[in-house]
Image (cartoon, rainbow, N blue to C red):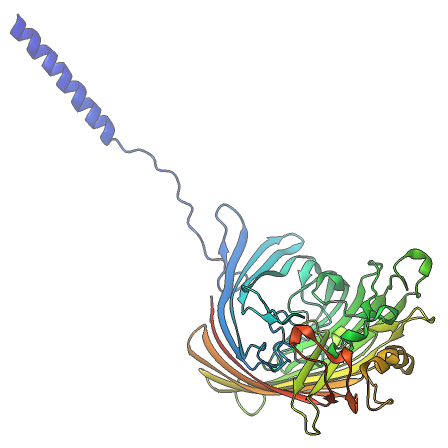
Length: 501
């Protein structure tokens, strides 16, 4: 009996084990796999987001820059990337470096009202550190300049653009008609983005018209200077700072319009802008009063010619601008608002110096309203393709800024404190020009190496010499001395490696 029971139990256990194994071998219905599908509606690089009808594209670049030239066009004294760039002494960096990553995200969804688009472009940079002098001889050395930027972040729908992107006033190439430095004058440049609400109407055959409300205070240096000269410090005169910045709070955005024709032969664009100058108070408190608001304005034309006889892909880009009370649309936001440059002297002075200051307007508590600042400029460039792997270009830009006779009288009230040799030698007007050449080698797709050489000239209008206590600039280690007022030049070489993805 025991033997029979053991056999029966063993057989039952075996059957259970076999049944379990067979059950484990039965096919189980797998979950559906959602494959990423290519979205061909909006060009290469778009994919459908799984489970949605929205297409997305990721892109950007990695860049390494080396800029040779201590007083170069890519940054002057007031630029964060080139403090003491114009000092030309032992505090001046003879080279600057930058590592940068750009990441952009583009999404698009087709709807019954048209395509809904969102776009964001984020910048991560690390720049060369800087050295500044001090009154006691000690120097301040920064550990580096990490920075984050949001150049674009907008929604587009039914012709409307809402958020941050380039201005509709700008030419499509911004301030780079054929490459070149960030500080090329002669037109607007909002490549770092400006907050706006815009509408673009498409009239067909490449003809569009746009209107926008833009917030210049959403850009670094976007509003420029509105100098209250009554609060000026004579010691800052030689650095191109002619007063305290007298802006009040926001009252009106810039009102901007543009008409553009974009066809196979190239494009033509005409832009206008109105800019509200809203000052604060003459003094530090409300009872001191204030000037009335004044509107500045600017106008710009741009022309691009493609498919020219010199070669396939060659192009010529040109633009010209005039401003009255809106100087940042000529000496654009990447150009320093004020700067100085030193070099040698040929008349026996300690050194020579040239300095310049940019403003939208000037006012003083002595009375009167805002005296607007006028400027004009142009820039252009020619690009030639030697082969699919080699491209060269030549470019140039020029800007002129002038103050009214009343504004000059207000600014030059501090001229005597500079100890001038020429009592009539005070004139804050200036011109600034840049010319340059570059070559780009692309050995493989989306990998480019650039060499860009530029020469700049500050044509300042001060004359004679200056001397006395107010000639000292502690941060630049410049002593009290006799300085010749002289035009200044600089030469800069940019070397760049960039991988686009």
